[in-house]
Amino acid sequence: MPSLTLISGIDWESVGFGLGFGLVIHLYLALALLGIAKKLRMTEKRWQPWVPLANLFFIARLAKKPRRWAGTILVLFPLPIIILLFQSQIKTAVGSESLITVVAIITDVISIAVALILQAILWSHIARRRGYSGWPGFILPFSFPVNLIIIAILAWSPDHKSSDIIPK
Image (cartoon, rainbow, N blue to C red; front, side, top):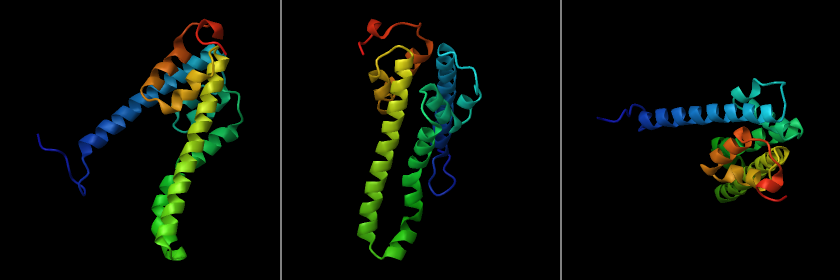
């Protein structure tokens, strides 16, 4: 069967697969966040896990952290894309292509690293609130597909003390 390539070499079958996979992961995360909220007896704003980006604020609430943590993550993750979109305009204004490229790479690495570390801290706090050591939560943003298993344990495992699994 020929591939659906219509616009400048875009493989629409891959795009469709990626969107479908992303939707399945989003639904799984929403259900898991609701499961964690139920275990932690949090009943307010249970619509947030279903809304993309709002679920970050729900994660911050589950971790008992301020909303600005989620806001910081929301600013840092798209920063590399914004820099990429405006890189040619910045090069024209500054006049040094190599300097802008180096600054863009450094900014990208730092912003993504900080956003991932903030997510790790949030998930670590959620793991502790569920009675686990913080380590499973801390490795969560860095370990796909293992993170799906960790999220399932946090959401649907019975209540227990942290000494049952990993000492604090």
